[in-house]
Length: 68
Image (cartoon, rainbow, N blue to C red; front, side, top):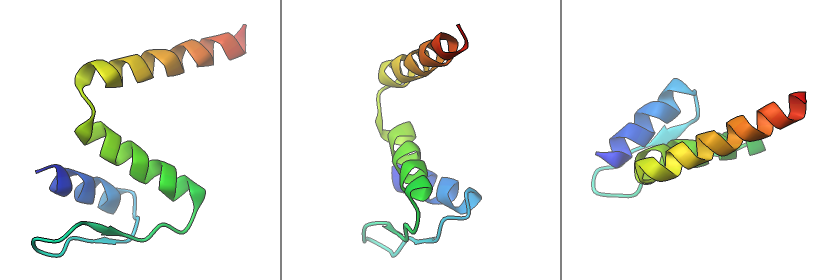
């Protein structure tokens, strides 16, 4: 299930990937941005909810500090 979620998200982001049967997901990473998007997609489906909430709160806090 997690592999499918990551695969579909990468397809939405137009990041080349392949999902061979009973094999790990294969992803072609050609830019640092794509590497971060891959990390984010994997984190989204593997991290516990409380960790995702904490990460969003930290990002929000950092963004509001920049504007001050």
